[in-house]
Amino acid sequence: MSAPRIRAAGVLLGLPPTGLDLEATIDSGQVFGFHGEDGGWRGRIGRGWAAMEQLPEGVRLRVLQGEVSAEEVRRFLDLDRDLTPVYAILGGDPCLRPALERYRGLRLIRQDPWEALAGFILSSNNNVKRIQRIWSSLCARLGEGQGELRAFPDPARLAGCHEGLLRELGLGYRAPYLSRTALYLSRNPLAIEVIREASYEEALERVLAFPGIGPKVADCVLLYGFQRFEAFPVDVWILRAMRKHYFRGRRVSPEHVRRYARRRWGSWAGYVQQYLFHASRRGVI
DNA sequence: GTCCAGGGATTCA
DNA sequence: TGAATCCATGGA
Image (cartoon, rainbow, N blue to C red; front, side, top):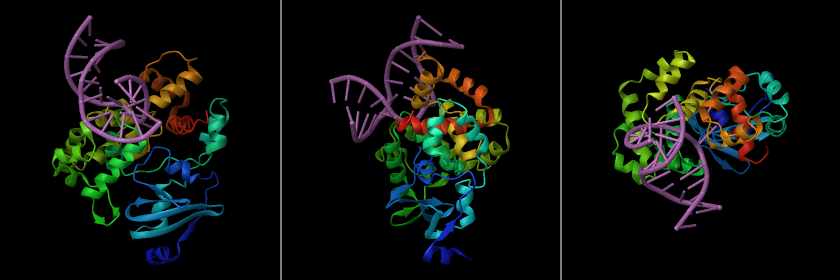
């Protein structure tokens, strides 16, 4: 077992040919449980805690607690995916090229489906900083683990706690949504696998059936939790950016933008969305 | 005090 | 079908 060695000295993950921008990947609103610490990031991956730091020669990985293999981290960051087709789209579009030039190596993370569901239920009409705070509160109050390093509570754990507690932790009107989704999944754990095996259209329909999940959140769940790159979540940032660059500032509905993007960028629409979202929020485009 | 945030559900025309 | 309206909360 290599975990003790990784824990002591850290290992170096080699970079893929199409690169990695660790900061943009972790800090672009995909995951809510990671924290920046002296130049790197720490967070839970699989059954343990990892610290990651980007160096010129690769990513330095240290295991802080539990079991995390280098292979798990490579998979989490999806380092084996060839981003050439994404770069071709971004580089060939004058509106998107600045996002590529600034954030080349931004990757879509392979997140745990339950955590993606929960995280984006929390995200509705909320801001990233508050979502992160609520996420941390849920871990601290209900998660397995010791001290600071606590996991996000599983569906059974969340289903078993009183809705009033969730409101105390700042969830507001989202409390019953998360509570009911947790209850359903604790009783129907195979629902995740059914979604995983389904076509995009059927998966979308199934995710939309959860309380508190509408079109935007459903596409986030499919994109970040199930790697359905044709999903194109349209939030207020994406709507603004798309209106500006592709609709001459015209008023268009989120659904119209979503259909347009899927038609234009096809099976990579979700990747385009991530670059657009991050660059837009950072004021790059 | 007002506006905004990775929106969704409900009501109303 | 599509447009208002309400929903909790905290920072700007």
